[in-house]
Amino acid sequence: MNENAPIRRAAPKDIYRLAEIEVFNYRLNFYPIFRNDDYYFSELRTDALARDYLERPEWLRQTFVYADPAVKGFIRVNGNQIEKLFVEPVLQGRGIGAQLLDHAVHLCGASCLWALEKNERALGFYARHGFAPTGERKPEEGTAEFLIRLERRAI
Image (cartoon, rainbow, N blue to C red):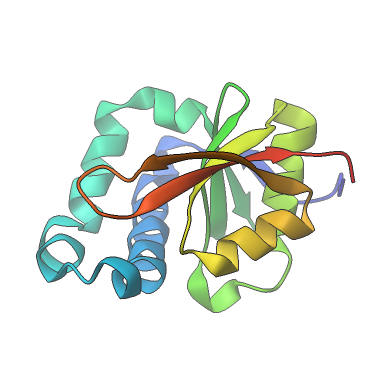
């Protein structure tokens, strides 16, 4: 674990940046799978997502940001489950996601998550960091796609 990583709990000042990173990642990673123009380019908006963060203060309490000095990525952990992990797309591949995941595992006790079955890039990332499919899957609400459950194994 990198003790010097610039990771801190999210603050209200981070809300719009969190929303921006999440929206860009959803469009980049999930639009090619779902191809839903109405959702990805009309409903999924940074202002609406930022409002969701304001209305759900528990999201901020469960979110940690990588800020060096600007917020470059974040992870949300609820209990032992990772709910979100996103890094600014132009900064991916630089170890930011790995540091956030390491933080969640070692400091928050995160040990499981659900990932889109067709998101091969994410599945590869999690596999490299000790997460393996459990065989459990469930439908992604409102779609024909599936999520698979991953649990952290000893590396």
